[in-house]
Image (cartoon, rainbow, N blue to C red; front, top):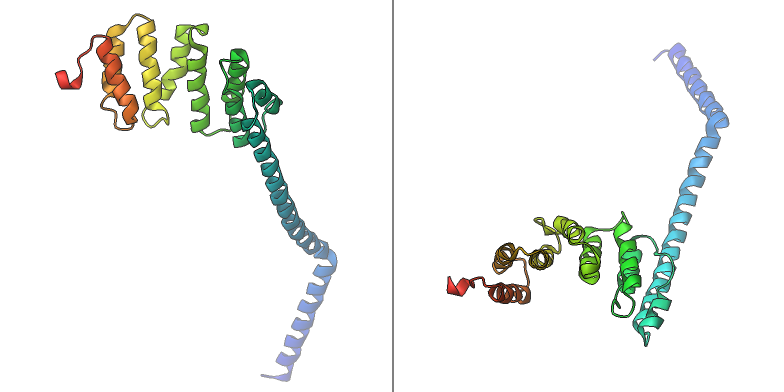
Length: 216
């Protein structure tokens, strides 16, 4: 390589170095911000983790205190207030709905709070709906209860069998005995239904005048 080539390479290297230093002087604050953001993000995540742990501990203590309450009134007092976000809210709301015999209106109000939440998995939302239909009974119009139950009876729904059983009772209440028998008989062969529910459905179908599978 000639001396002129070496000289040109050295000049190019110096120029690149100068441009790099210039860029650092001009844009170095961006790198500083990135570093601060990464460090700050790590600190924020750690703070949030500790806050979540503390909030979970406090929530757990509160739920245990409610479970240990001597009377339904004391339990409701422990569970008063707005529902927290997420699954904690579902748990608190469902616990607040555990004493319908003592305060039916408060029970239904707690269930409505859970149902109104749009951030809950179906297993919690549907349980609140199912419990509302059972607790409300004739206080809710028949068509309204049927409308609440219908989405729960579809394939793959977590409480499909229980919802179908309640739907059969609504059919009886509405005078559709034949439809109730058909619904109950279908439950006797529902593989996802617990054995106790299948036996209960078979007995109820027989009481209504339907034939049991053994008699067919």
